[in-house]
Amino acid sequence: MKGKGRKLKKKKRKGVKIAVIIILCLIAAGLAGTGYYLYEQANSGLFFEETKLNGYDVSGMTCKEVLLMLEKDYSAPELEIREQGETALSLTLAEAGYTIDQMKLLSGIQDCMREQNIGLLFSLMEGNTFEVEIPFVFDESTFTKTVRAENFSQPRVSSTDASMEFNGTEYYIEPETYGNELDDADLQVMVKDVADRLTSEDRPQQDVQIDVPESFYFLPAVTQDDSEMNRTMNIYNAFCKSKITLLFGEEKETIDWSTIQGWIDMDADEPTIVEDYVYDYAYELAAKYDTLYHSREFTTHDGNVITFESSDYGYRIDRDAEASQLLADIAANTTVEREPVYDVKGYARNGRDDLCGNYVEVSLTKQHLWLYKGGELVVESDIVSGLPKDDRETITGVFPIPYKKSPETLKGDTWEEKVTFWMPFYDGQGLHDAPWRSSFGGEIYKTNGSHGCVNLPYNIAEIIYNTIGEGYAIILYK
Image (cartoon, rainbow, N blue to C red):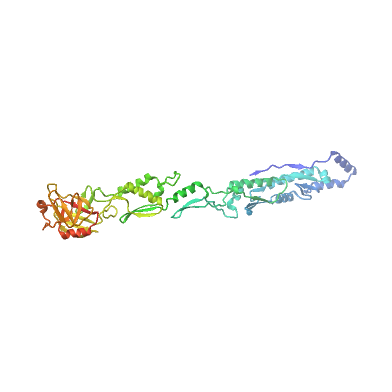
């Protein structure tokens, strides 16, 4: 608590000469009643007639009455804090933490009374004019609790920055909003400056209006005109509608905005995709889904699992061509659904399963064949495979049947045969009917085997020919 120092002033007396004359006159008159009157006035506890204190006529008033009058008038001004011309908060000086020290003020008034009585005769004849400072005491805790924006009549609303938003299709800018939150420290400095002036004046003051300047309010840090945000929005909108779905049968890989956003070169002058990221993605895709020349396990018709170290049948993504196509699809900024760009593809696939139950199974040991379509057995039959000597043995492995032809003439160095159904799978070897044979299976191949082809009964060859398509798999094992 801090008070203000006060000074006491008295009107300058007239010359000593007048006083001497008056005293001599009174003594000469010898009036006993005059002495009594002076005594009575000096002990009345009242201010004499024609007495003014701080401009107030206090004639006939006690010190306490003067105290209450001054306290009331000097504490009367109100502080009206306004926002946009409307009252936001009205405070008395006391509510703002400014109160008068009654004891100190009373002491000052009593000093005036004593001064009056000391100069009794002059005071009675000419009156007195006194000035006393009003000792306001400032309570900072009360002030800071009261002079706050949270006490204003209107609720406080925060300003918000402009922001870039995504509606699922494109980006847009949500404009900034302007609230009415303000800096309490600035407000308190301004109000205290006004209140200090009010409480330091020699005379009571009127109510004061204080308008909150716009500079006190917290403004949005980012507006809708922000150049960097607008640049980012334009770049994002050049690509954000892209959605490329790559089909691997029922299994899918989707490249959408969540992925593409990380491929953008934000430092480029124009919206640009970093090609290396796209090529890396295409290579990762190939590593995940390529089956050509990869090892594979195959479960035979009787449940045995065979492992092939490499497979000539399968799918292989053309990684560079796929990356180029992805770049084109992204630049188109639209929805695309397609298969990957392959340089080799099989008959059917679902994820890494590149058979999907569609294959010709050949056991060279059992001299038997099974044809499956969609996982269902279509037909099975005995066969005659290549003679296991003189380079005529039928190859083992997994191969595609690249095409089929009917009829066809098969030729060797010393032989020539016409067949109706020709389905090649490896280096001149293939499936075909063998009208020159009357029996199949058993151990015929060991002594009268083919030149590497898989010989079939005519009706079996016909069924296979009419069932399979280009790229159909054939799996040959011992």
